[in-house]
Image 1 (cartoon, one colour):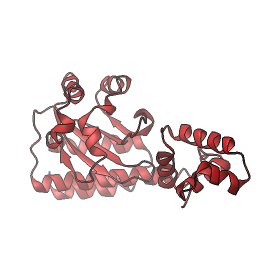
Image 2 (cartoon, one colour):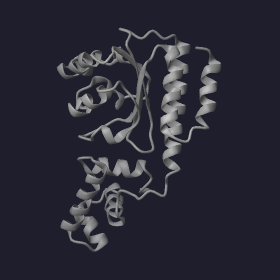
Image 3 (cartoon, rainbow, N blue to C red):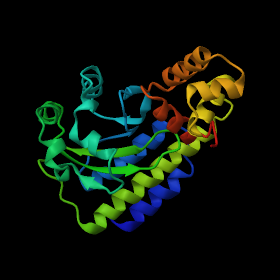
Image 4 (cartoon, rainbow, N blue to C red):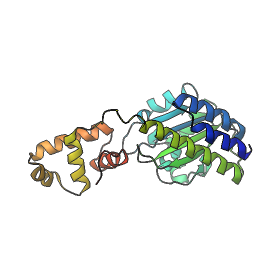
Length: 240
């Protein structure tokens, strides 16, 4: 791949108005680097489900369904490591304490049934998630990319991620997943207030505050109030 291919892709990103054409364009472009499949998704944390966080799904037919149904994200070393670093990495570079578990080895083994043997991941900050990752997959047993090719791949991944976020931001008229009261309780939680303190501030019972907090967690599909606060801040629903 030559640099002009990357610049041409970046230029086309500005013209994409839907995710489908963007996915097709990116898949076609990265074939030149030996990748046949890709996925762009938020990185699930603390019991979050993967499916609602996926923004570009270019995985092989059947593999995404298998991955989601088996809840592989919870044990997949590549997915777990993507939440712990912002440095691009080859899948083979995932530290053994995550890649060497029985669950992670099982995921890797099942992936080969769908023509996925190696890959390269580009973690990214995200407005809508704690963190996102664009993961490129290859049927080759190992990825071989020069330093320049890695930079090319990262550049395309970043621009694809920026395009997705821009498309999402264009849809600002969509309803917030939170009610006004849920935003209030998360705002005070972000300020370090307990449920008891928040109840006094808002003139509510502590039980009511806890009820709104629970509904807010459910709206984001997370299990802790801290995670709900992070999601609300990421989505710019509250500004602590």
